Length: 582
Image (cartoon, rainbow, N blue to C red; front, top):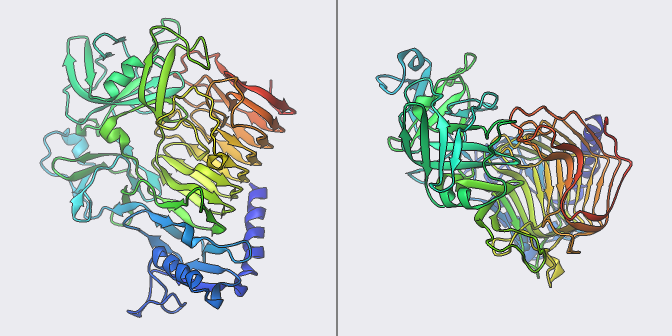
């Protein structure tokens, strides 16, 4: 941590001395002037207007941009109504970069909308009177005059818990899974007599991934309940072979819970959105006064997108000291979420009647995958820098270098309280490409190449999708993942590679060096501090420190964990001089 703080101080000191030579544009929340021109006394009210001004300077070759442009962001919470889009026309050059820098420590870009007007609940017959006295209710928020769904809620700096039948540490186990009927059989382990409510969801732990299924019907008997699910997730859950519901007399069956019903609202910190009546219910924690706390529901899935093209990438844009908060992720709301690995979810998957593909004679299944949304997304970029930023209170991925990223850097940032992966790099499986195929594009500019991820602190990620990772890299080359610290992880720390194939592909010459990974595998096993897949010539994994795996209460096989795991197809790598306790 001391090393990270020193790096941040060096960045601020060295780059601050450069700013006097650059043209300056200001963004701020407060201005007494009606006409805002981006000056210190009349700052623009949003980043988009400042980007437009900088774009015009470059278009007109204004002298103010010759040594670079600095967009200064004053403290405050900025709430864009749509994703902020940085385009090729916003690019700088090595001699004249575009900086987007925080003036202080509280320049926050939020993808959420505030909820106000909380009142004690009255006359709600669905709630036990003993519990109702702790519940407050408010009108659901609107965006553009319309109500919108959301799956997360933050009360002040704390994430609230979507109303659930059982908490993370006390999940019951399924009785069985009926693949013929595409149904889960679960015990009747609910405080009251179970009554199915529309909108309920089923969360299940499956080996190294989870699934979230929308319940279509529930058939209750004396001793058990049979759950049926909506499509497309019902078919996906039953047809994909890996990973599937775990049934084991020795270790116990898959753990589960039910989510999203007012009747489950029975613990401090839980909340429920009544979409039909447009009300939000919240069970107050004892120390909370909601009139003094900022309560936020996420609205935007991506807060900032930096995207160019193969021919014209976004270049030399540097972001420093900003905070990104309150992103949403809604695919599970409309289509469920059945994951294969590292949070990548099935679009289609099934077992092959006759095994074998061109690349793998013994492969017995096929899968096509989607990729979760990210709060910050970079595609077709070059020589960009993101430093000293904070990514927190986010629904899915923190930041995603999705494709075509050349020599970008991500240095000295904090990732905390994130529902999915902290950082993703490069292509995994495109939606049109079968997941087990080696990736070797004709145009190598599509690859994420030479990106440096260094000195970042990543903790408390994957707190909704337990199968996501701290840092995940797919088909990447010349990437350096160095001197990062990762802790409090539900699954793997650093995952490098994709494809499950020994065939030489686009991956090569990656570096995973001097990272510290502790307190991982909190819920999922078949896990490692550092995990690799597929052939990666010239790759080095060295001088990493890995320790303190959790004892997962739900591991399908309690012995199936590793400090470093070279999984299927891993080849042509130098793995040496790493430290583990045993």
